[in-house]
Length: 187
Image 1 (cartoon, one colour):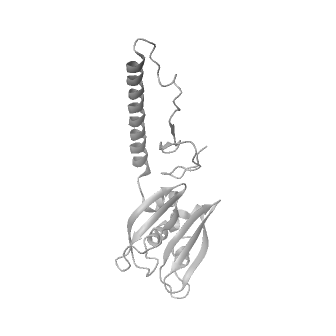
Image 2: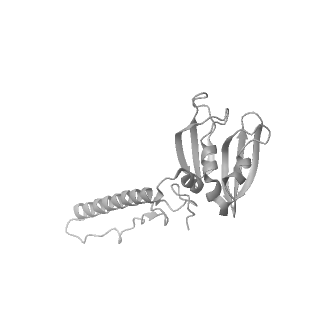
Image 3: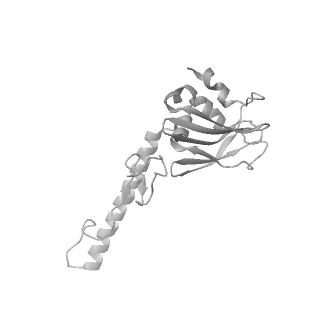
């Protein structure tokens, strides 16, 4: 199959116009998409995850469309929450009045070609820098407050160890089920 074989999914069956994806999630080996034509309303459909490369450009195009008029939008705000990328678009006609789009973050990152490796390296470096800063503060505190007594390293203290996402290195509290940056499941 190729992009033409998936084109009809991303168009309204009545007017053939492109609409906006307002919800996209992965479920087993399928991608579930909720799509809205501004004139004829919403529809839901499934496409195979294994063929993602064949229609990823259609997903990207449909993510950046106005929910109300179907015209191209620009990204105004994004927030990663659990496995989701929560997007707020800006339409030149409808301004900021668009609803939040809920897109599976891994698909969003793939569709928009974000260099996740670069993000991962920045996050890991930042987390390591924060960790080292905390280590230094603990050692300084121990040496000042304990005087001549034994200096305790952070590994000997009761301070909980900082945890990181195994996939991207983002600092986590340990209560999360999914990484807020890359969407990976936390074990």
